[in-house]
Image (cartoon, rainbow, N blue to C red; front, side, top):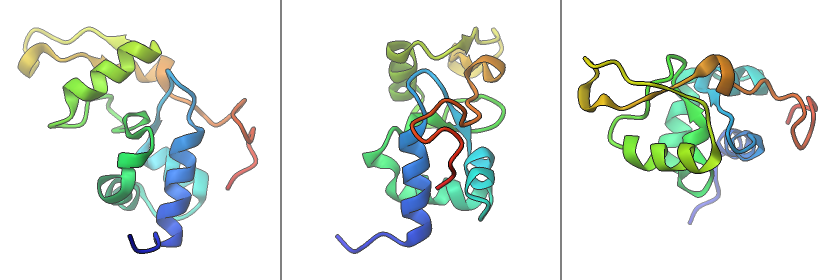
Length: 116
């Protein structure tokens, strides 16, 4: 495999720092790195995220990644990630992440606010 672009390596390093049961949004990761934006982080995760806990980098509205909902949900339940009950109108009645409780701000992590 070719060497990862430096930005991709940095995004994946942040994904690995997120503790079990917690999440960061694509925008949170970009802000943590002080580089790029949510779309760039999403692209990195789509292309290279399979080797890291990809389910911990999420959309800001708490909806689960389309096409990967059931795999992500299994991880969330195993890790005890806070979820919100799905609305009856929600397609497939898939829960959402409880972003107020699940979102991680980088404090208390392996590097405790020492940004990558």
